[in-house]
Length: 154
Ligand SMILES: [Zn+2]
Image 1 (tube, rainbow, N blue to C red):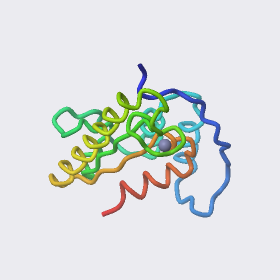
Image 2: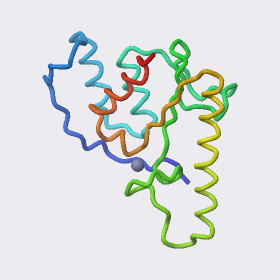
Image 3: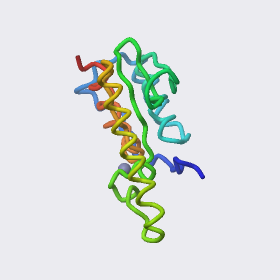
């Protein structure tokens, strides 16, 4: 079963919203290319965006607790990209199923608990962590702002 149901990115991208745009034309063009791509899963959307923004990162580092999806070693930041259902986001896609509750509830509760423990452990080692939810990757403008704020926060 696929943890990240794919969906089309339906966001309308606005060109030329420039007031908070301090990037070069070239950077802006690469970011737009990254977010316009029809492909695919939430994690790939985040990776493409970070790459276009000029950040270097590593994937799924096994030596770190919880194998964070994306790690920016230079900034000591770790990003988890979570599917809304499997990590029980609480948004419309992240609800308990209506049937087989006795199966799903403990399963999803365990996922949530493990997520929390992983983040706590990483943070105790000096990593800043952030979760990007699947549903957040639909609005790539907002996502870009969120990523930038997280990475640059000191
Ligand atoms: Zn969600």
